[in-house]
Image (cartoon, rainbow, N blue to C red; front, side, top):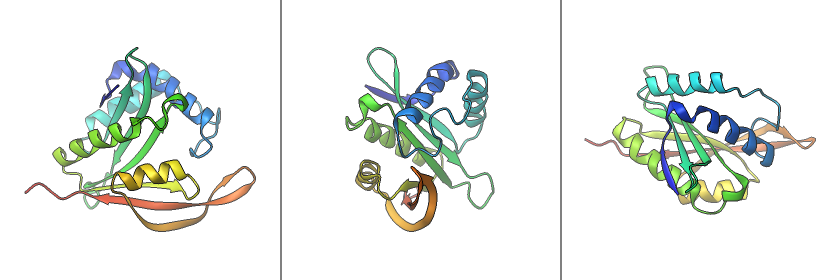
Length: 170
């Protein structure tokens, strides 16, 4: 299993993985089939993120060259928040709990240090124990609660705001 930055040639595989993750996870923002993820649009997203010094996508790839996880780091676009990146992570159902998330976050932290990113942030449904465990293990801390943030399975659920501060290299 390797974790690496995405290539434009990964667009189709990433599209498929995103659809698979959204279909198998009850805590992603988008429900299965709710949005159209198309290869051409995915290519453009990859190109745009690669053009920004403070944004990237990491993917985890198994021995068969299949993508099994992704991590988007979406950098701030104003001068005052360019030092921060919002994180979205998804892991294929068959690979959850096997260290894929840890590998992706380790790659992210190395990249962030090299690209002047000192704040990583994300949100997580408060009852997503697997996600919370991973984020805490990787050094993220809860900053606050977004009450009734999402509507899942006919009920409102809260999300935690979480962040990790990375010391600047001086």
